[in-house]
Image (cartoon, rainbow, N blue to C red):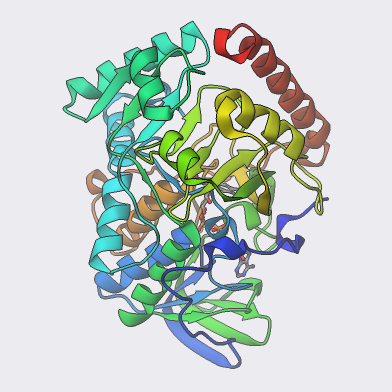
Length: 437
Ligand SMILES: Cc1cc2nc3c(=O)[nH]c(=O)nc-3n(C[C@H](O)[C@H](O)[C@H](O)COP(=O)(O)OP(=O)(O)OC[C@H]3O[C@@H](n4cnc5c(N)ncnc54)[C@H](O)[C@@H]3O)c2cc1C
């Protein structure tokens, strides 16, 4: 079975700017802690930082370096949405619990930009909103509905017509767009390193290159055997998202990890920088697959790109990305690419993150469905509050039963066929878009 935890794909070089990685060491002896967190991505580090703020002692174990998983590889979009639509969330969880989830998720960017400000994290943070382009009339109608929903709740969200969208994008490609000014962008690896530095400053301990290999009950505590040391903890949080390995039976089988690809260009000319996304909001669109485009602070174009969803060592479909960017910005000419990378996103069956109580004192918070920058920051805080004994009414993510997916090993051909179907549907719909012909 293909395992993200054994994928040697390197972290992006272009994210190695901003807040540096704090100095950390390998766990080399037996130690005791109050709460152990497994995984130093956004979720694990937000859990650790918020636990420290609530006065708990905490130790983080990370298999690689800080941000080695999705957090160090993401596109960088900070959005107030889960993968799942707000109406579906309310339908699944009921009006009260559903509204609490939708409201909490909507506050995700506030938490991220507040953490960045409070801990002086240098991570290319920019909060100018997010543009979601509509590629069909039906999609535009649903964006109008979404914008009305949030406007009724006083949120700075608007639905733009084709002309206003063209002005914001420097492209006539879309039929209209949603502009959500609560959202923004970050360098996600620098944000993650900043969370780690803040957690350390607040008194947390972080051990890197220290994979948790065995987790078992030891009297009233948990014992974690790591690569070359061990940890005894009263409580444990597993925060390993798509990089979940075999540490706990069935946990990896509750997720479908998909490989996602990113591409960064050489710096654009001054003219192109002024013409493309001139206000610098990140852009995605209403197609089913791979839509992210943004212009980074150094004038490079950064795109999310299609590619093989399961193969370790595979490369992004650069030719498809080039065709797409030329249709979007016909003036762009020939682009040189300076960097490509990949990472794994964890899909869940209901497209929402899962919080499982695996055993007394053992929680797992996983499954961010490619939306973890804001959401994993929030879930980390929620997990810390749950451990500190906050009442249920002040928590948003319900605890659900671990549900390993049946016939998980046979899923790959099924998901590959589904992705091909999405590609076909996207292509057919785009053919009907006047500017895309
Ligand atoms: C290419 C790409 C683009 C994305 N773009 C966006 C975006 O624009 N916006 C957005 O919101 N989200 C995006 N995401 C999703 C987002 O990156 C993730 O949802 C988020 O980073 C998950 O954070 P996490 O802390 O839960 O997990 P991760 O960051 O994956 O961290 C898990 C960590 O656990 C460690 N680990 C695993 N097993 C063990 C073990 N046994 N012992 C110790 N450590 C272990 C791993 O090494 C890893 O560092 C993207 C993801 C990818 C891959």
